[in-house]
Length: 249
Picture 1: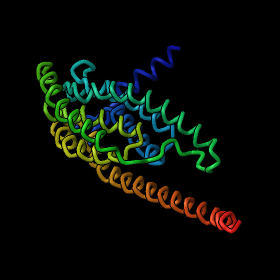
Picture 2: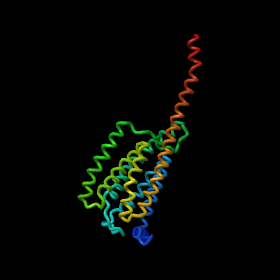
Picture 3: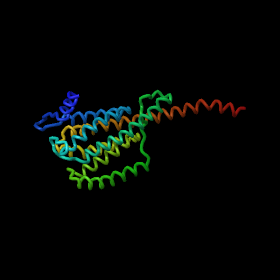
């Protein structure tokens, strides 16, 4: 037991020096879990959620620098809070995708690994997202500012945008990829200025990655529409002779 605790403490306190700046190993590992979760999400695999949760737990301790005495010694309450939000929404996403996967696996389509079918959000769903994005950013900017967060407005949008993107991923809305891009545009400068270089580098890489994910989900949507149209045409062709015979009778 002592050896396990010693190894855990060693991991939590381990640092690397990159370009003269101390970097926590757990920040690097947590971001790698986040990247793995995004890749699995693009593949629509249920494992995206538990892998993401592991990264959220690690990064929560990183972004409360004043509490956990990280090298940056900065409290980004929005960044830390979104790890808690990720964890809660991920539990829902994990359950929803697992349910969908069981349904898809049993429908005879052969897409046993697909845990969600991508679709565009409806007009009403988009209006709700927009209202939540604007209202949520204003509210959380005030909250984070009162708590003494470093960069409260940017921190607030990253928190709210991440919440929307994660919820959209759980729902299977293709727009969630675009929301992530908007989060990255704000997140990269904030994290670089704060000295969270591994997280900033991940956000930068993530911008290209989510573009790839967006294109991938669009392709899947088109393939599904084409398959549905083909199935409808086949059904029409096979029923026509019977209809003709009925008319002849």
